[in-house]
Image (tube, rainbow, N blue to C red):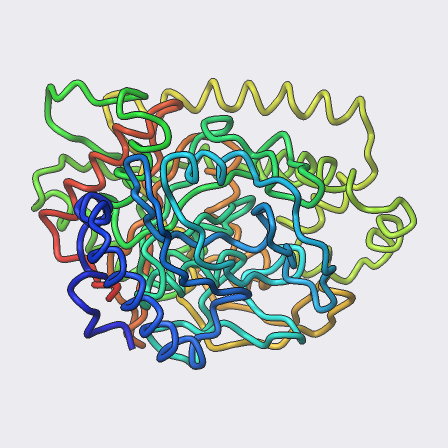
Length: 463
């Protein structure tokens, strides 16, 4: 499914963009893209909208480079479905700020990619359009909520997708589809326009790219942000601090096996690797802070009677004491408690900087759970879903939402840049991904480190 791409679609983004100044090269690329989508899209179902018209005139460093955009992010002139079963039909009047930046540098939006309703699930499907399938095995989920973008990039139907991440929405699908993603540090890229009406959340929710590899992510970052932000000084040996599992880790057996082998692989690539349980990241208080802040801020967009009904239903919170219970507590919208939580979060972020002393990045799993076959929710109320699914881990049985956020919440709370890379395959042949967490403002340094690792290691191929 992911093999046999035309040569033009396999070029590094930097080379591909440079070649598009030539009209014949541009026509060849868009024709190859259309053919690939015609062939694979009926099986993968990654798109809400497609447009492969060849740009007549191009400009900027991207020269008409075809990109796709997650369909919760505004693109002027296009309808934004937000993954809803009954989307509106009025096109957005203005684009999200980050989309405008890419367009000003010459990018051409050639599709809107699928997501679950309200971007509120770790699988990508709705009743209106069906499910998005993992290109490595169509019976498995592509993840969510940026599952359409990850599947499109992994299958070669997109060379770059703009997605969004709140509690793992970029990282989980990138990990399970075997591609790379960048969740920029909080505030590094503008978030305006990632929600309907130009709205955005103050914390955690970030727009970021999905690409085939870290080198392509670095090119996109250079074009939009400039290579000088957080650039490495080139001195000293590369070093990372990697999380190590124990018998009580919240991981399934294949993830533990992959993780135990990873330090030696990283060391073989010339990167010094220290093993660390990183226990402070997983303190229960950090899950409470993240959930209550997220609930307070997302709750502003939910009518009070609906918030009350959601809190009254205790079932989801009982099954997800580490995630949904805290989000529902935040729905109370207590301003004083929110201010206290923000102050506590600032202290946590400051204290966590010591984890980066002497190293360039922290390395953790994206999830402790391997990609799974599509699962039906136990309830679905206009896109707000609950699951009776449990996963067996070293920490015991974990419910759906707690299992899938156990590693994304602690790194999301920090607000630092994260690059997701595939680092192994599970027994089903699907990718397992890692989070590489860098310093605040250190996106460029982190991308350079990850690109170096890719060049020296045989990661699981995405295409």
